[in-house]
Amino acid sequence: MDFNERIESLFEEYQRQRNSLTEMMQKMRDISATTTSARREVTVTVGQNGTLTDIKFPTGAYKRLAPADLTAIIMETFSEAKEQAAKEAAAVLEPMLPAGMDAHALVRGTAGTDAFLPPEPRIATSVREILGMGRPAT
Image (cartoon, rainbow, N blue to C red):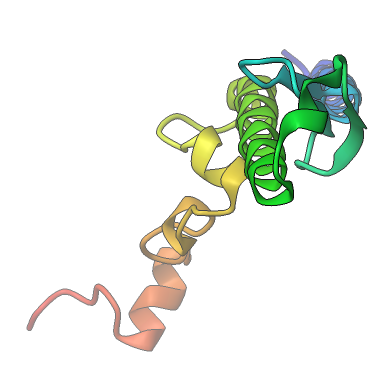
């Protein structure tokens, strides 16, 4: 492969990666999860990042509840919808991540720094030798 073919190949790979990232970002924006409580008192919808986007009361069942009970049901249903949205986001993100990276931890914000940084910095051998890192023992 000559130089021009190599450059063309690299540019095509860049375009594929860019298109894939654009598609993934659109899928992430489109994530929406809706959950209804067990007795249909409330239906909650959240967006990709768990932001509450809608609350509906599909029946009059909520009227029979004490305020504290209704609050608990709304919060539980919201939590379930948030979890569903997080799972969908992780499924979209996972194919784009390096092997071994936990998409669920990234989406939930629980990934440690190891998820983002290598255990050791990538340094050229000559720089390592100058810094005394990896210099052969004499």
